[in-house]
Structure formats: structure tokens, C-alpha cells
Image (cartoon, rainbow, N blue to C red; front, side, top):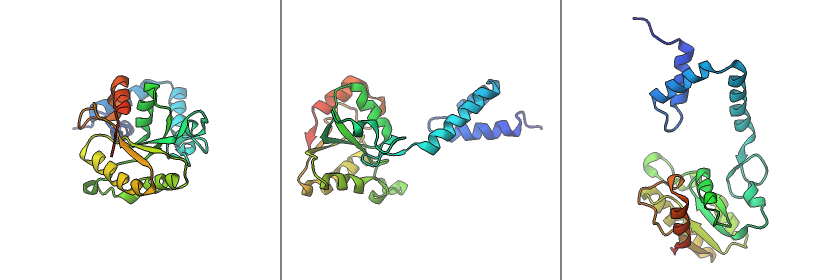
Length: 200
């Protein structure tokens, strides 16, 4: 029995399916949609992917994604650079920024400690956080990892490293549900969690 789809379309579907949250049915819809696009639109889409991959890198201060040496938040002199909110990934920064209430800066770990998945402390951006604190000027570090087993373990590990450096370490007060994901929280919940954070 012959295959229904051309091989390049199957390969495109498989590539879309590698993206997080995209199952095979969604991947197939995306692949078919690409086929319905004008050639110029597809070229622009492909160029946008390549351009982002080539030009976006980690901020040399906070490890957020940027196309500059420093991200716009680190460059903003009106932000409180004495307060650092530690998050798992860049998407969490977007969630906090939606609240419009947090005026400090961030540090992105790019993951959580998870020995079962082969992620150890040295795999995260913990050393650069410690270097920032040791350089001086930071009063408080807010651990804003997700309230999961890995998130709590990471927060506890980083907190233990920071406390001897004489900085106040706090943890978000979670009105956020246990096992929840920060990027899906609404602005009010995030603001309240930020406002009612506790010292670790």
C-alpha cells in the first residue's frame, strides 16, 4: 500500500512534532499549512528562524535571551539592580513582566536540578548568579522556580549557596498551585505570590 504523503511533507511533519507541545496531528496541520503558503512567506519564515538562531544569545549579566550584549532589562538604569528574581527559563521573565509590578532584575537558570533527567547543578547558570552576588550591590535574591519537586530542590540548593554570601534569599509565597507552571499563571496570582514572598 502506497504512502499517502510525499516524503518531504512527512519529514516536515516530523520536524514540527519535535517542538514542545506539538503532537503528530498538530504537526501535520502545520506542515499542510506551510504547503498552502506563498513561497515568499515560507522563505521569510525560514529566514526568521535562522536569523533568531544566529543572532540571539545569552545576556552576559542575567543569562536571558537577547540580541545585544545586555538584555533591555539589565540595561535599564531605572530597574532595582539590588533585587534579583531567579527563574527557570526566559518565558518566566515574560510572565513576571506582564504583572507590571516587579521592578528588579532577573537571573535565568535555564533548567532545574533533576538527577533523574541527568540535569546537575553544573548544567545550570548557577555559577554566574554566584558571581553576580559576590560582585556586590545585590540585597535580595528571590527564588522564583516552579513549585514542583525539582523547583523546590533547585531553590533550596541555590539558597544554601547564597546565604553565606550575606544576601537575603526569599521564595515566592505560592498562591500558585503546587505543580503549576509560572508561564500559565495570571497576573494577579503572580503579583500576589511576589508580594507575599517568604525568606528561605
